[in-house]
Length: 419
Image 1 (cartoon, one colour):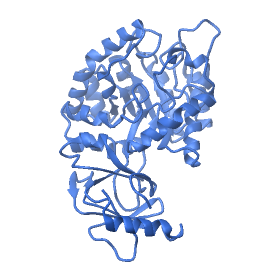
Image 2: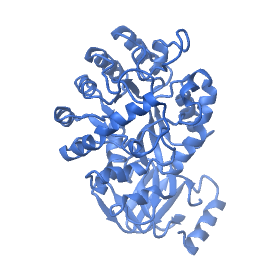
Image 3: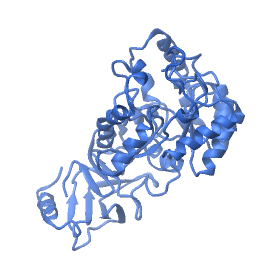
Image 4: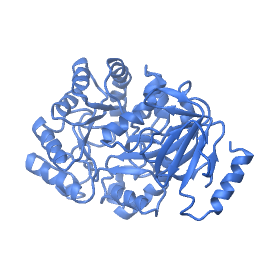
């Protein structure tokens, strides 16, 4: 809670001219140094504009102070697998033939806000599948029109014809896609698909290496691209400085993606010992999207059967990957469940053998590494002033991250305090 003196300082700060108010001091009882894995107390962070300029132990003179009192500071969290334009609301199965790209983008507005207010200041959004709605949402956030996290966007996911990332189950001629929509067969079409997504603003490429659950196509986990096609995706993306995430449930498709040099295996539901060893040795990240598997869904019978099949493997796959030391980055598949509940993923990791600090690192240092950025992921001088505050000590109880009290993005207070 903000103390009486802090309230006075906040009121003074709010009355100051904008240019004079850019530099301020943020204090709290504690801060987590995610790199060292320890609590720092007290926490004193000097912020100038959108950057952290200094982390120190004493409050410097001459600057306005925002004192958050008995709270714990952490870096803004990063979710590496979201779908901000998506939900499983009424009619989701046929939405692709009814919605417009504009409506899809607008659907994401409250979900972006909920995600940011939950403490996630950056997300990797993996496929809107309708007219680059994810990229439109990201640009609206960048312009300040919409409140939301920083977004790394995929545009259309790359899929084989009739695969998991192409809308299926409709009559011939309805919603047929090509490389522009991410539907590509063979290396030449795959190259066109990747290039077209990049042309229209993709900052990450998603490829569906296997079949999935929430789609009306073949057996969940069946491989859907050859190694040669996957390698073409990776090489083309890397040529443009982008990384590739692979939707992959089944073991064979996971191994194909690892061999092709894909940067993250998202879901990774059915892992054998060889796949785990390959991931560990190559440094390929696993983005488990674990929490979603322990919720109840009202799905059509075909999809419910696939869900139950895949779910039967998930627990042991993640436990074994954690024990083996596979690199793990935090990702939730938000959209499949309620946006804003992202932080429930932390407890799912800890319950399967991960230490709380390592769970926190999946959404900070590890996620930043997978994104390929060095400007976020910890509270340190020179980095973006993306900071959250929670009560209690997340190193003792990661569930406190499910109740974020203060969110700061780029130095601007989003919720929980006032400048």
